[in-house]
Length: 187
Length: 137
Image 1 (tube, each protein chain N blue to C red):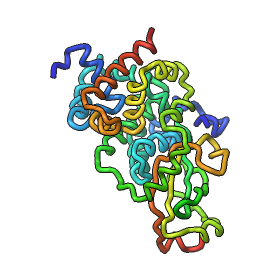
Image 2 (cartoon, helix red, strand yellow; image 1 turned 90 degrees about the vertical axis):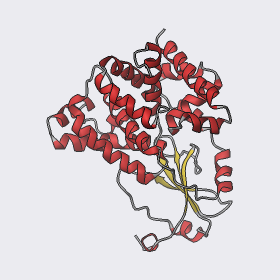
Image 3 (spheres, chains in turn yellow, orange; image 1 turned 90 degrees about the horizontal axis):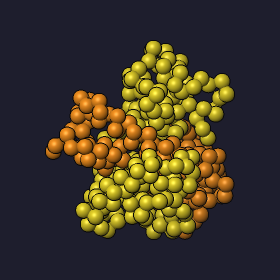
Image 4 (cartoon, rainbow over the protein chains, first blue to last red; image 1 turned 60 degrees about the horizontal axis):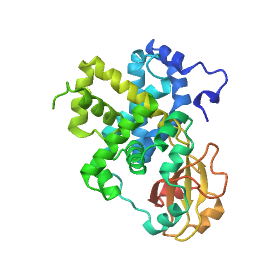
């Protein structure tokens, strides 16, 4: 569901951000209602912990309120700008130790075995056709590395462990993958 | 590091946005961003390239697995923000065992069209009853 579709009467996000910059609290409340579902999902996907995702969401909205005046509509969409704030906030937190996996691993694996992989799922729903096409044009290893890093916030060494590859190999997959992505998106 | 090298700058900007630039290197890069308008433009271009992926993320749904080997039961889509008390249907409550678990999955808007999660499981944890959880809601 697109955030703007929650209410037909909702002013555009750009306008809400401009009102936030003028210190108008009702605009902020409205922005929160409209955007927090999406932003929460972004944080939860990276952090995989509800409490941390909530913490990041609150901190992000504090930053959004304080920095609304710095938003420039010609540079990014309002949603891109806010997602960037959430991601930066979450990436700062993510380096702390993660929650122990407490559930029965075997049981969870049996559930996960029937599901489409997170990467396929991630691209499937994407409205960003050009990005999707360019990701699909990458080598499988480059694509996996980039998506794992983006969605799970893995470092190079975490990627190396996850993919059972030497650090240098993984680094070059990420680097070359990003270069190819850029060239593909800007022919 | 020589931050003047254009290839290095391009690489750091892309890995900063991707998230692989971390720890001290990330903070150093952020300080540099504050002083370097050209670098900010490069970073913004990467944000515009990669962020559409995050925008496409589907919503999350809460599931309870009453016990080992049992099928997950949906407790509904998670609220956008804040906390939400979820009333546990009596039939699920009766089925709960000591190995019960909770899981959160990504699902299509509106929730899973089937009675089972179809999206990837994001988070999982053991079910731990507390006074509040047992109290009638």
